[in-house]
Image 1 (tube, helix red, strand yellow):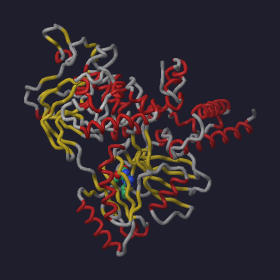
Image 2 (tube, rainbow, N blue to C red):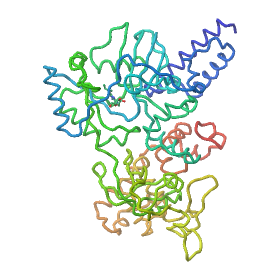
Image 3 (cartoon, rainbow, N blue to C red):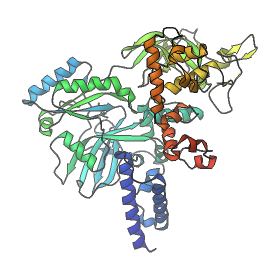
Length: 562
Ligand code: IVH
């Protein structure tokens, strides 16, 4: 192949890969298989190795991360990146609207969006190519993190021919909650300090001097405005601009909504206050923006905040309280999980009495002691966690936590599972202790609760209490036994009337309609979460063929090692 042929083929592959990326990461509608994608990528890499003069910084091969930068350069923003005024109550929101209406002098529609808790970036495109990407910095000057942003698959490196010749697009880079947990688990295995929340983890990842590290972090972006553009007429409203940005390759949030009245904006906030936890990102409120640009221009800014937008924040999710004790609960996989017993405290509208603690090492690393005042956070999760001790409030009688001591059973003369008294062990290189008895009541109960949970077989009514009661009465011994339960046998349980028993039997029958991926997930196999269960289902199609799968077949799947 000569260089001209290579150039042609390279362009062809890059277009294909860019299109595949867009369909996969932005539209969520993949059109080519992972293996076709990999094959094209390999071919492109080989050609670029062979003809180094044809390698460009915007090639899809460069998403793996460039070599370390000594330090980030500074980028001056053409227009400052502003922050937002806050509303905390419906009254605040209404007051903002009334003020704005008065200044605007005529009614206007609005756009409601999630306020994602990540970090703001500005992406400049010149002649359809990503030129620079910068952090917000102080709003006027940010850090040049172009190399790192290139590793984020949902940021287009090239735009279609008809895109504005020069433009700046702004958005929020964030780490998914699942990505955040995975990252922290990995760091905990490597005995590294843990990130306090997805926002810190995203900021830490994006500001890595070594872009190859950034490339391994599951970062994503939602674009939320056009900074500026030249050389092409743009739509006259925010909503239409967002539709346009989507059409030329940017990832926009599908949950944004255009509304005509402030009542609808208020309803949007309350709707999402209820279900924001179901999202795979953390959002700390909703943003309400005036839709017509002429009104935005007319209203202008005050200080560093635009008058034409407001952030209606979700209630605070941090609080300080006392750590009374650390007890142990046994998880469905046998892990001995330390659980914080807290002096009850109100956090964002709910009373918190317990908090999750990752493991003994993490408790030591954060230097959390029994008796400490601690900062707790409901970080989008149902179970709150302890962020840090308040060291200044120590009296001197606080006690460090020691797992081996905690589970030591004097009558047996050894550490023992607090539930079944079996031996406990800590595998080489792991941070968790395990109960060695798979028949341990706590493990069995946990497996049943998991089997019935929402993402699994979705059998409502079998939570912690009911699974314990069913086991204690000997009505079931494992999840399969649920399908042999009768209304009559159920009614022998305390507080189980005819109606509840009928409902439960119906829920069990309905669970037979759940998709295969939910059933695979429900089995609670270690390392098979929702995502892997879906991948297994897509590949094997039936439980029969999955049960016949060989180790080699399984290992061809992404994310599944020996
Ligand atoms: S609009 C001039 N829209 O919130 C308006 N910002 O407090 C400012 N943010 O720095 C940007 N989601 O990082 C806007 N849908 C959204 C947002 C959003 C998150 C962040 C952004 C900004 C901060 C302002």
